[in-house]
Image (spheres, rainbow, N blue to C red):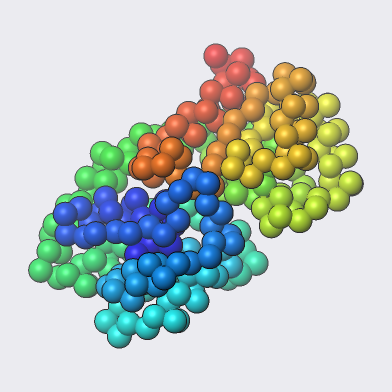
Length: 268
């Protein structure tokens, strides 16, 4: 059982025919922050031999599901614990390339412990996933970093921060604005004015926003950026379209960011 489909997609591909993965959040319209689990979700947790939750305050409902459905032989992976982050840290670790690789290694190791008879199978699946399946993603990450590292970008919320760090980009947007949009609170007038000035004076090369969490303030900034000739790229919170794989989703978004950066720097 994976709380969210971005981790579930990776888990299914690493396990192949030897695992059956159910992702609780698998609808692009669902909000992982305030999801209300169903009775079916509880049954899925109760019968799961392995569970993957994000943690870091992102999916507290998943912790409640686990505690309400104890399983003596269940192995539990909490991403926050794996990467050493507690609630209050940036929870969007599926956008951090280095953390994605840590999760791949950990899931494979856990599969081998749970099902040692097929350890060689899981090692082979991991190798294929890293060397072949995930290769376009890894190549885009390294390519963008080597070409555009150090460039200033604007962002709508903190979901972009781990990705920007992984790509070597500098987010110019005030962190307090990023957090406000991510947490569903009202950003300050001071932050909005600062962003307006960044766009007006072209202090950012591109603007990246989460299209699944496009508030009135974010929509206004997207409009301003386009009017100023600043390329705009989008990301989403969860897999889109529904049924997409982690790597295809990420590659599509990375190509959009790469294209926007190329336009911004004249490398069309």
